[in-house]
Structure formats: C-alpha cells, structure tokens
Length: 183
Length: 361
Image (cartoon, rainbow over all chains, first blue to last red):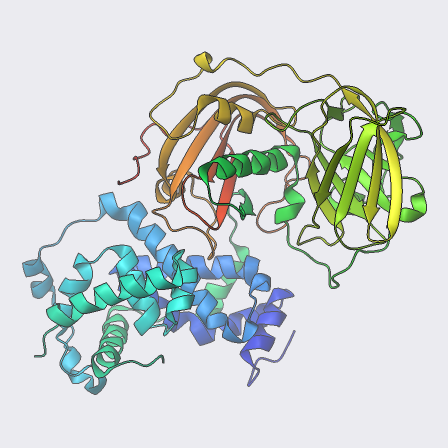
C-alpha cells in the first residue's frame, strides 16, 4: 500500500493499476466531484449522474493500467464519465418523464447569479437550454467547460475527429450565446 | 483552460454551480469499494484499424478480424503485461505433454498440447516448431488437426496461423511452395502485432492441397517447416436459408465472416443499426476510444454451432472458458473511416435484436 497523502496523481494511478485500493480510493476522493459535475450536465438528473460516475470508477478499477498519461488521469476519467452518462441517458430515454418548462420553474431553480463567476447567466435559462440539447452536445459542453478538455481530447473521447469536435462545439456554443442572454 | 472568452468562463462557472446545487454528498471509500467489487458480463472486443477506408477493403478487414476472432486470436485484445519491446526468451511448456498429431509432413511434426507459448493462452492450439529450432520460430494453428491448413484463395476464407518469434524482431517473410516442386511460390509478409512482442498473426492462403514447404525469415534469422494443406473446405450454407432485411452487407459476406474456425453457420441475420442501439441491447463494456454511439454498424447474429473460445479474454484480461454457442453476435463498423471494432458475444438464449432501430440517415 502507498501512503496517499501529498502523493502525485501519476503515482496514484500507477499504484492503483497494481491493485492498491488505498491509492484508488484517493483517486476517487480527488476526482469524484468533477466526474459528478460532468455527468450531471449530461444527464440532467442527480441520480443518473451518480450512476454514471459510479460506473466510471468500476471501469477505472479494471482499466486504469491502460491510461497512457497517468499525470492526466482526470481527463481520461472525464471522458469515460461522459460516455457512461450518454449511454445512461439513451438507455433511459424512453422512461424519463417529460417535464414542462413550467414544472421546472415550480420545482425551484438555482440562482446562479449568486455565484460571481457565473454572473449574467440565469439558472432557469441554463436548465432549459441544456435540456433541449442532444446528450452528445451536452457531453461536448461538459467536457469543454467543466472538465476543461481541449477539442482534440474531446474528439478522442467522443469518437469524433478534432475538427468535427471543434465544429460541433462551436455550433453549440453559438446557440448557447444566443439563448443565455444576460440577466 | 484553453483560451476561453468571458462568456465561456461564465458558462463554465454556471455549469459547475448548477451541478453542485443538484448533487448530494458522497463517501469516496464507499464508491471505491463498490467499484472494486463490481463485475460486468465479459464481452470480447477486438479493435482494428483498416489501412484503406474503401468499402471493399472494409469488408475484407471485417472478414479478417472475424477470422481472428473466430480463430481465437483474442490475445490481441488482452492486456500486455510485457515490459520490453522485443521478443521474450522461449518459455518452457507448462502443464501436460504435447502429443504428435497429423498436419505436418516432410521434416515437420505438428503437436497438440501445450507448446512453448502455453503461457500466452495458446495451450489449446496445435503447433509446430520451425527448423532449426534455434531460430526460435513456432507456428500456432487455429483449426484442429488433421486440417490445420486447407487450400483456399484470396477471395475465400483462409486459415489463421500465429507465428511466434522468440529470437528476432522485425517483419516476417514467408515463402511457400509445394515440397519437391519449385512452383507455384506464394510469398507473404507479416508485421508484428503491437503486443505481445514477437507475435505475427497471419492468414495463409495456399491454392492447392498437398505438402508445402515454408521458408521463413525475420531479419537475419532463417528457418523452415513443412505443413500439410488439406483440400478446400466445403462451401457454406446457401444464403437463401437466411432471413435478410435491408442492409448494406451482402449475404455472402455475412456468411464468410461467420464461417470461421470450425463454426457451423446455419443462419445469419444482419441488421444495419447504430452502435448506441446495440449497446442498449447488449449492455457491453464501455471504453473511451471507440466510435460514437451514432456510428453505423452491422449487427450480425449467427445461428449454428461454435465452440468458443479457446483463447478468449474478457476486458479485464480474464480467460473465458470454452462455451458451446448456438448463437453469437458480431458487431462491426459499417461505413466510418478510421478506427473500427468488433463486439463478439455469446447470444445463446437471447432475443435477436429485431427492433434495433435503423441508422438515422
């Protein structure tokens, strides 16, 4: 077992790949929040996001030895999460209850204006716009603006060419710019 | 962050804030424990990268990959535990004693039972060592004796041979001619597999039955062996026996993919669908680098008999025991260029995916 305090991410990955459960648990502690965020943007549901993140760790435990750049394992995990989230959304598509925009408003919408970094983006608008996007488009947004992957990395993660990922991301962003008007 | 403008930075912050407000707390130790103890059904996946993206070549690539799959060349998909780039020293046989079987001729004896590379998952494959044995080249066959090789041509099925070199790295050149005759000569070259090192998967297409002499060379290493080539295999079942829906793949091609390595194909059914639809149907393992869910694929369900898979490994590297299958599924990318893949799964007892949606075109 390795001592996980203050250990570098790459060393944790290599230890986890050798079966070190403590190192694997430390990876979970470091990255699970980010994976939940990526999954939530795509799934639009907290329970499904938790499923996607959990599935990611199940895959990671078996395949983390295949990560080529151990120092950037977060990107690999985010990519796996995005694909798991897309799979879950598609598999549940027929069973998800449709909720009208009016219902969403009644359920209560986070007031993002309280976050100074998000100033100008209204939570209700964000939820409405994200809900209208294709899961793959949401995966593009999540990987770019939550996980902060490059277009090339996003393309590899989602099975697109780099130029294809850039083009599709650009189109989605253009739509978001129009729909997310400043409050 | 990659050159984001103010709107993009605000968007990122808004997405994270919204997610944080919708998510609950968690226990990392519990999540890790659940991941470590989780298990999924094994699915064999064989990636391939066709060098030429034309449809004809892709058809050929599918056939070759299916041959590798059906022949049990799953070691190609198995995690590589080696630490060096060159061939490993010849290991000693493990477990059991090899016994002579038919398949060789001239100066070569074919054996059944664990050979020098049994530890690579090849203990069930008939094998023969090239002479001189100091050359360190061993051939492993995927068809049972006595017909480890059979006559064929480039348009039909070809038997698979895995050449393993223990002494020399580099391209493998094979020159074959009937023993005692100078013609015809069939020449082929095979590159080493990415892993394990020193492995050369090949399909051997020889035009006529009889005893054939093989001259092998890898770099400065020279060796030879003599192998018996059986008569051509009988044709597969008539396509009219199958049930066919609208698809881009021909009946003949579907049969050719499935009719490998001792599999008896009674019927093949094929659907043009999407990878996402297949995933939802079969719940396969997921990996990062693969075509998008929208990728158009052939989903082919074969009915018949196939004792699979002597050298199959699941995605975790665990060996899959031999299973008698009455129905199995192969999924192959249909039209996209670049990376392709094959799913292979025992489909016995499962409903055929009649309702897989067609691609959205």
